[in-house]
Length: 446
Image 1 (tube, rainbow, N blue to C red):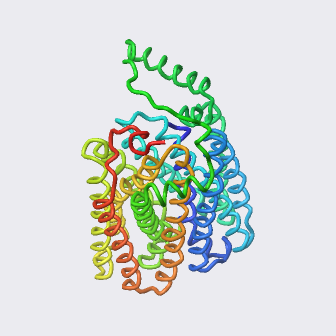
Image 2 (cartoon, helix red, strand yellow):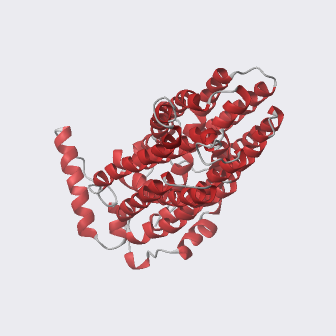
Image 3 (cartoon, rainbow, N blue to C red):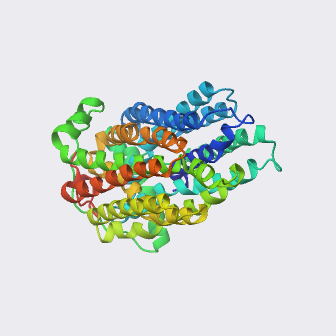
């Protein structure tokens, strides 16, 4: 679980660090960027993540989940170190895009592995919990930024660069943990390596039986698989997404676009809102990011169990709709001048307590509603489209809105995000699949 969850911890760290150092990047001690350029570097990271998901996602279906675990993490580590050495807007944006490619590739392989290794009765809560570890990275990033961006602790020309070095160091440490992860037995069987799949499953069963102190119940049912017919590549992926399950594709894309726009709109520009409208010093921004991250972390942990008991459709639609409505109300209060920096942060904590669970469920929806042989690539396609259509647009748009120094302009952006969340909730209610406590092969036959 630690080895799988590190993906989101690293991504959360990356996004938090860039959000926190945004004001510093605008100074001479940084790279002397404009507010719009700060937003554009966030967009570059997201575009890189989308393209990386497509490239590495195809490799994950073809060569296996475990191999890609190590490749994408090593790629991310290298490019994050390069980001620390950036010397201009162009170099910073390029290295951010390349680091994002590694994270995007992680999403496709890791989400596949989670759902293929976790029992169906607990798949929802585990998937949400692992996705929710994104906010552990945020908490770590905010605390590290608080120290590294303090000019009394670290030279202001060096502190923001050390933030990226921390991410690379964390990735280096987890590579060794990743090496001990098993390959997905489902993927192995699909590619004809039944003996290796059997060894992995027997080892799991042996350890669980030893911990439980009793033998496990006998498996029930059979499933016939012809590996020769299970092709990887784009043709079977598009066949599954456009011909076999078009309604599921609409649901997955709606959820992914909406959550990507909401999160990247708010989180990538949180520091700019606090410094522009509430005069929060750049070095104090992490103090506000920390409680925001805690609220996001608690959402999946507290609500995750309900996705397995109450059901997917009710919980996904409910979290999306509620977070969208609360955002619109908070935006109205912001325009009316009812918030200061502290109360606005508290409002964000409440909104994203629900939005965090909903956003995590978007990845769960894609990974459990498409067949095994196309799972990683389906995740990659939906993630890429969602990121480009929703997420990549949001930071640049909100950076421009904040640059106007006009609260009503920012409120209009909040209303767009609210509308996207409400539409996604409606799509889930009408077209969504109830996948709670069902085997993956029952939800999407091979």
